[in-house]
Image 1 (cartoon, rainbow, N blue to C red):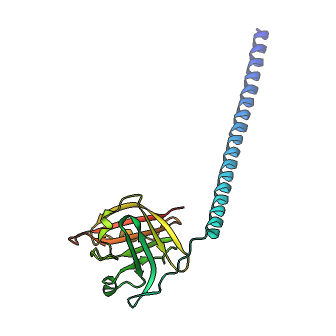
Image 2: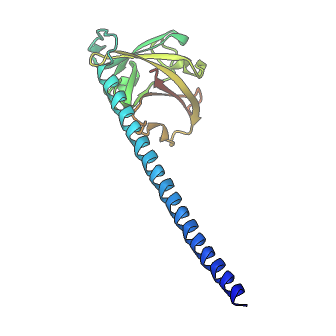
Image 3: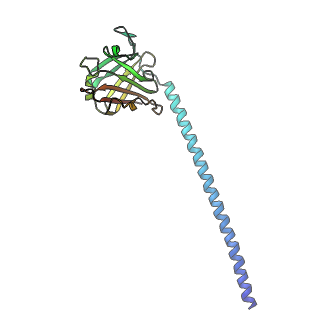
Length: 204
């Protein structure tokens, strides 16, 4: 009987020790996993930071082809030149939007200056004049366009979205572009009931 109790006590003691060892092992394992997760997060953040620094350095060092743009067109100040080879369009973008200016050429409508990071918005009539936006409706996703200015140079953009909106919808003027250079071209449909929106992003 005494021997049996002794064996039971030994068993209980061994079981208790085993449980404590197991719990200690699990706690060590959990701490190790947490530390590994913290290290992975730290490494990931450092990688992203370094990538951002590299991107910024590339952005700062990148040079664009220079092309001298006329400062005036028919008495109006010029902001940039727009070229869309797909529809054989080459036109000056006037600096200041007005009803009168729109009858002369396309104009800057909203946003940043040409070729700066952000959303550069250009409006134009769909008149059949050679320097207007009549053929904008013929463009397709993937078509290219070029914006040239006297400060940054000539930058190539690729069209990534084309759609129509009612006149009161101004969402296309959104300024946030996640640090990218974008161009938004705006014109009317033939019946003027909707606006044709063409969105393009710099090709990197």
